[in-house]
Length: 171
Image (cartoon, rainbow, N blue to C red; front, top):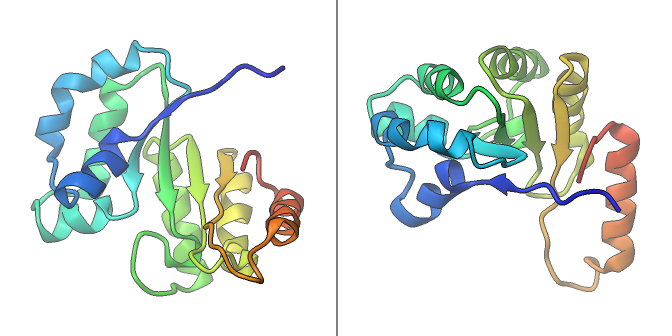
């Protein structure tokens, strides 16, 4: 049996869900080195609404946030959440924009990119997956669950198989 690997998400999803992604980088710094010593497989620190909140509400450079976190977290993989073709935004972006954004995220410290599409459309994830793989990062694909006549076990099994064929390292 493979060992259990735990990804800590409080520095991305924790404050996104609880306080509208308003935690500043300065508020994160005191805990980063302690978290790095816990032994997590990864710490999810970036993506989702963090990029937008840094710019719109916190007057922070999201790229500098990522570099600062990487400076303090030396032993644990850093993970981000990517909305497929929407990146960290709220609309689709061109393939060349997706390519450059993903490359820059990895260059600035991201080791694992957890990519999803809210519609579970693998076509909206393909470009991200291809770039993640070509840059040598770990591509973790996520699926969005729903219940309906269409969203049954066969639907999700087939979706996961398709994502595996596209290059997902983990689901």
